[in-house]
Length: 124
Image (tube, rainbow, N blue to C red; front, side):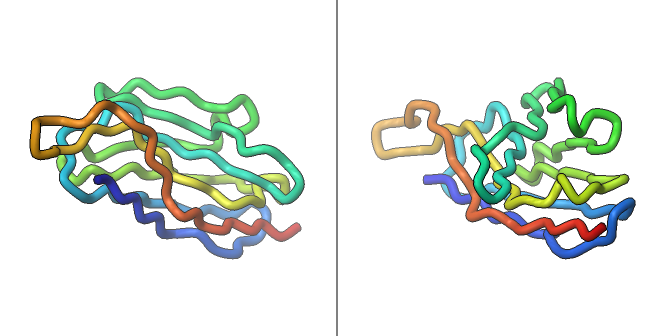
């Protein structure tokens, strides 16, 4: 199937920067959208940013102008560059990919895959 592994989270002071990475691996046939979501304590998971295989991007209003999503299709990797971080950005950040993988009979239907999450903590 498809596995997603995130890295790059940590503790940073307000105004600082962090870069998250998420690498997809497995018997990947194709990856469509890739993106980042986050979940703060007591809140629902929310979209942060997504990017299509063609490079189109979408951002949550709260991060627009501060976060940049990018993607290396050759490496099946998506990045999230976060700048001007605020305490309200504190959350577990999850990588998501809509992908298809090779099976004995051909290629699987498209499914959503999630990483294990990486903690981002922004101190005031």
